[in-house]
Length: 218
Image (cartoon, rainbow, N blue to C red; front, top):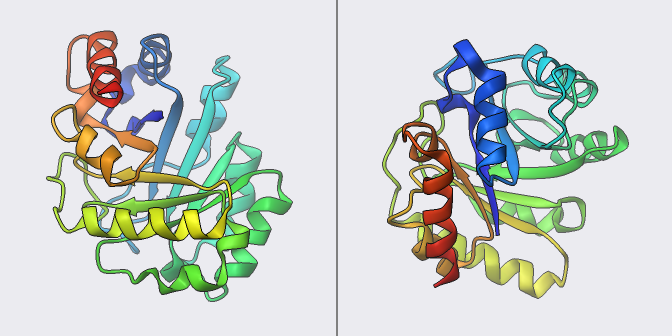
């Protein structure tokens, strides 16, 4: 069970300290949301941020979620900046299979993300090319949104597809995941949880992550 705090919800005036603190508190990955104010209605960060975090000595697994269209030209920059995994949306590229192969050719793991209204039919052709499938349980763009209940069915469907494939693919969920619903998200089939404000808006990251672990162990 992977807990991946999204730095979108962190205090950017002390981002290095925030990332270090959440990792010391027990987080597994660092989730980096990249938005372009084109594919999604928000503008966040570029490759400079993960590169700077690496230079500051942070060696954690960097999970980079690209919400950028077109996406292919920026992928090498994030690989160079220290990404370990790069996730893209099908709508952001003309040739999804080629984009996933590009990510892998740069030494990163590859993921594909599905918005609430994006059909899962893309998976029919790329299951052998992905290391992670991300189900967005909110419409991407802003943190702090409420979990969309219909996402549970989508998570269950993807878990079934992963099991049928026999492949080692992580199932990540992002959007409105918090202590009170994380067990339900896990029970639907997720094994990887992006949490933003649910962690960074609290005063004690260690207690919050401990509470999350407790729920996941039930």
